[in-house]
Amino acid sequence: MEKALWYLFAGSRGGANRVRIVRELADRPRNANELADALDLNYNTIDHHLDMLAEHNVVEASEHDYGKLYFLTDQFERHKETFEEISGR
Image (tube, rainbow, N blue to C red; front, side, top):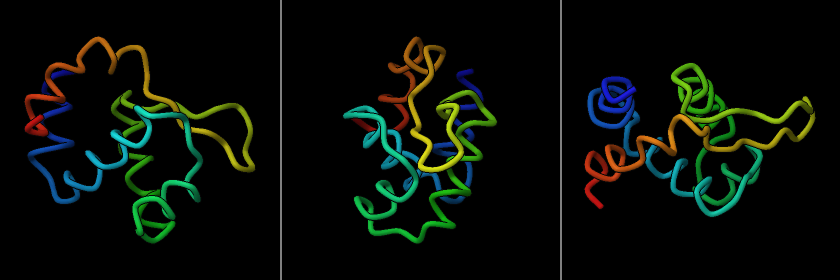
């Protein structure tokens, strides 16, 4: 998991936006539209980043297709210190 976090947040383009998404989801679950509005990003950009975060077990989606909510995974929560180190907090 730690290697995936380094890749997602420091080793690839878009890491800064993925950090912003994780910070928003740490406050409360949100759907892609809410994230796009809160972060002033295009919906397709948010969708791409959520797909990458889900692929690496950082976020998981609710069961609903329409307006599905995204949550941080328990696996990510166990490695949150690494995320904080990477993101500079």
